[in-house]
Length: 243
Image (cartoon, rainbow, N blue to C red; front, side, top):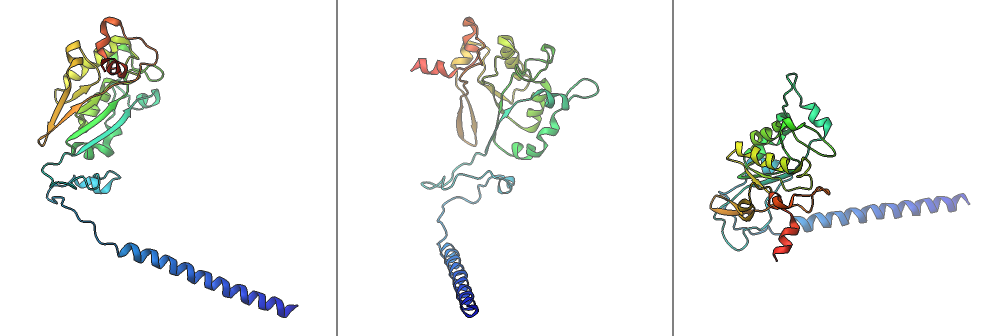
């Protein structure tokens, strides 16, 4: 009985060693096959590169984006959102003199944003003026200082057509559009001060490439837009009616 048990243990040990060796061989084959792959050919002009920060972040250039022709121009684009401030975040930036400062929130992305040609942020909520009462959920009015921080960080395109755009009513939309006039280097998209502005497609040209800027929202959380100001906010259903 004891002799049989010992033989069984030896047989099990041999099988285990064989299995380990087999697994190791399998892993070696996989690594070898990967290492033996020829390097991918590329006709990318290496003199045109993304900013240094790109290699240190999850953001990467699209693979083979110059497959059919040599690169003639490169535009670096960064986009983020939603930029939405709840009450706790609003309170966190309040200073002793009653003003607000939110530059600290964007410190870790400032270098990346400033080194981009197109820096887009979705400003989810209205910046309707601190005099209309700054507030968070459920109807937002974001402090004016948030907009200042976005500009200081380097954003040059702001999308404002969102489901929260009407949180402060049509006056909030108008005030937000007026607010961005303080920053002529920033292009606000999605809200309009006139029918003419609504009908125009805003564009921006960088490094010889022209971009069209379009921004729409699916709705306004049940808040109705006055019929005589229907042009104030870009609704996606309005686009459908034009087809």
